[in-house]
Picture 1 (cartoon, rainbow over the protein chains, first blue to last red):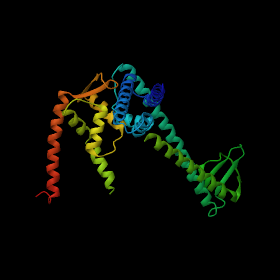
Picture 2: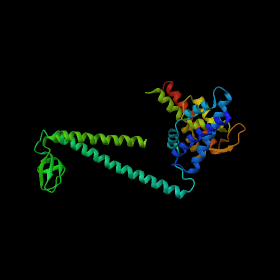
Picture 3: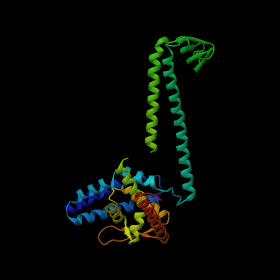
Picture 4: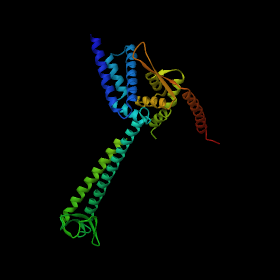
Length: 206
Length: 112
């Protein structure tokens, strides 16, 4: 009775581990995934039998030790995926279309992220530059309103606004010297956000 | 230089060569190959890496496998070398020996 309970618990732990691994391997064809899972299951059970035969530990203890040595399912999957060849076995057309669509979306998302982070850096540096330049050129630097209801910010050189134009005719300056803390705070915040996004992306891509 | 890291990289670089060499001695199943690798290379190799290497070597045609019933446990996936694998292993051995001789010359005082 006790042995049956232990065996059921062992099977449940192994099944849980393997199903997590199976999910993490979803990018490879189903038949290959099943083959890998079957092999790892066989190796786990074989190792349990061998270590049980040595008689030094109880079965649950042995199993936990084996799974710990094996590593988290996420880590095992990422090792397998990082070293696997792209396989076109099975239904070639289906695999080709699926890989093409997936890669297209990855590239498209990468493109959007690049544009987005570029904008964050651009505006971040511009806000900080505006805050730094304001004390030096008080009348030419700042945030400006417009009679049309729009605004702009940047540095005025020869009646041109370098930055975001406030649309003609340009109106009164907004915020005055408060533009310094505003520019520093919002600029640094944008740069910080851009860094966070890029670090996150680098982690994801690795 | 981080010597431990260098040592690990060096050993990992020849894992495929080691797997083929182990299989040259006889057909073997995954767990046993992994054990032999850990004992021989003395490096804590991630299991995922080994399973991926089995898969890659199989896809490239160097090894084949068959499922065999075992009297003391679950069915085992037995790997064995293909003729292509044997041929590549021989070439790898030749390169390896030539590489060792070159390194030996460098260590003994440089190429003259």
